Structures are given as structure tokens and as C-alpha cells.
Image 1 (cartoon, one colour):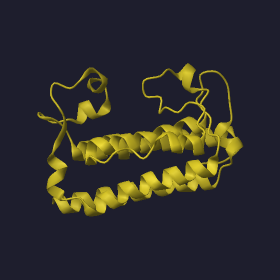
Image 2 (cartoon, rainbow, N blue to C red):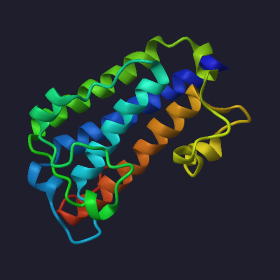
Image 3 (cartoon, rainbow, N blue to C red):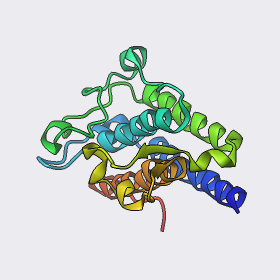
Image 4 (cartoon, one colour):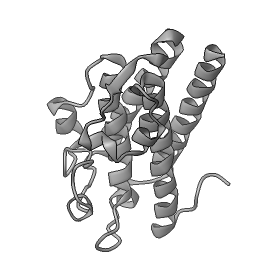
Length: 188
């Protein structure tokens, strides 16, 4: 049963990543950096936030350090080199991507690493607790806290919540925001 679950998760992650690749390929830098109005986050926020959160979360799930570093910042030139999880909407509405092709390269590297890890992971590793109870305040009010079992958040919970479900949430934002810049959605 665990192998079936792992296969399903790997396929869902690939499908979700393919939506991000399609979105990036069908938008320009002007689209992703478009400023609609106060209180509305640009597409660049959702793209970088999710990719950088997948990168950062991967360390907790796999033990591998994040890919994002000063060299990537020098290439991508994010206006705010932070995923923004602890920042306000007012701060993050100023997020912009400087070099879109470099961002796409960073995204590809992050997503490829996650997919390769899911292809090679020992199914027994999915039950390892990565955030035990009592859950720290920064996690206690999150969706993953609602999903967590009696011991806490497991590797499987992390992949499901922090990567897959979180990624779909931001893809929904991107699809909606595409309408604000004159583009359509990508799925029905």
C-alpha cells in the first residue's frame, strides 16, 4: 500500500510541476511582475514563494540543503530575496523577478531534485516524524498541523501539505492572476 501511495504522490508532484512549467512558459516577465493594485500580490510572488518554499522544505524532508543561495540571488535578482512566509502582503506586493530565464532554471533545479528524491526514497522513510508535538507556534496554525497525527508531522505529511497541496494553492492563485494580465487559465 505504501508503494502505491508513493507512486501516486510522485505522479501528482510531476503533474503539478508540469502546470508550473506551462505557466512559466506562457507568461513573460511583464506578466509575472504586473502590479495590479495595493493588496494584490503579483504572480512573481506566487512563483518564487512556492518554488523557494519547496526548496527550503526539502531540507526538513530529506536532509539536503536548499539550492537557493547568494549566487542564485545574483542570477535571478529577486526584488525581495525571501519567500515571504513571515512577511506581510504589503511587503510582498513589491516582489519582482529580475531575470525570468534564471528563475526558470532555479525552478527546474528545485523541481527536478524533488522528483528524483521521490523516485528513490525508501517508503519506510515516509513515516519519519519531522516536526514533533507539541508543534512550534510557527507551525501550529498551519494546514499541516491539522493533518498531523498524534506524534506530529511526518515526511509524508510534509510532502503532501508543504509541497503538493501548497503548490496547488499557489497554482490556483497564478491561474486567477493570469486573467488580470490578459491570459487565460490552463486547466478546466
